Image (cartoon, rainbow, N blue to C red; front, side, top):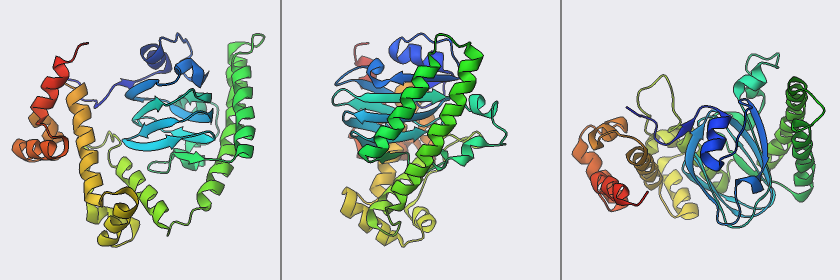
Length: 310
């Protein structure tokens, strides 16, 4: 029985073919202009994949949801995704820039380091995945993305040479991005409320990342979140209420409901099985919880989805 909450693509060709009918024979690396993934109003529904992502939006606006958290996209948006990150995109207008995808094997095969991705803070579990950078930084990184795109499609080099050369250009991009990432985040003092909100959101995301060593996701509590952030639970909820309009408990409940909706929409699990997977001991408690958030029972939600035209 399918247990993934939303579609999961194990390699680049499968993802590209499913999302945009793009044929690709390269299973380990790809770089694409955003225009290749559609224009204004384009929506890419939630999915997971095995690839790392580095992307730069030089023009355009919209929203990208990463593990259920919305982030605003504007000119000069740089973001990085780990494998398994739930991602979806809504473009308000045409995006310009590039999205780059690569597998862990592509990097580890060519690196002398045991865990090369740990060199880059934006690929660590639970960190801030998206930043907004200056026009000067955008221009410098856009040049690096363009250079990678040119070399990846170079007509006069063999495929092995192209992949080796692109690997080194990718390292240059990640090193430049690392400096920009650290400088951007260091401008925000972590004692400031806005940063506290970001850290709470990252913590909430982390608790729903799939872990092969556990059968079900661990659910975050307000007290545990406050302990991890080294603040009082009441202060955490007060800050979240002020800056987001919702308390810590509301955020946790909505994130749990988001995962429940994914499971109902994209798996064959029964309502009771979904409740157990989300750590509800009693199916009736899960039904009451789901209805309190969505206004419908899990069964009514699934029936409505089944009634929609394909």
